Length: 69
Image (cartoon, rainbow, N blue to C red):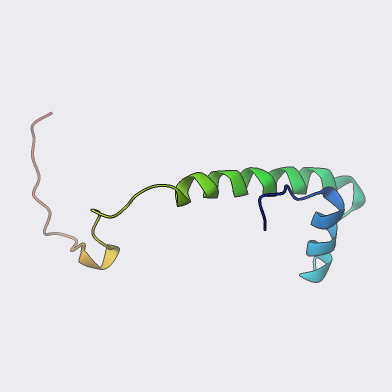
């Protein structure tokens, strides 16, 4: 999906392409939700995770518990 927002007719076309039956009254709502999800994901893509270890580096049970608040 590009920076241009998904339109209701495009949402219907993509739903049909995926084999989903999308009633006409849902096209606008589905496009709005898809555009919202896209905007949230775009913000997440801008985050810098350079210093964060990968999930594979996490070992459950090895973390140190600290009662300090």
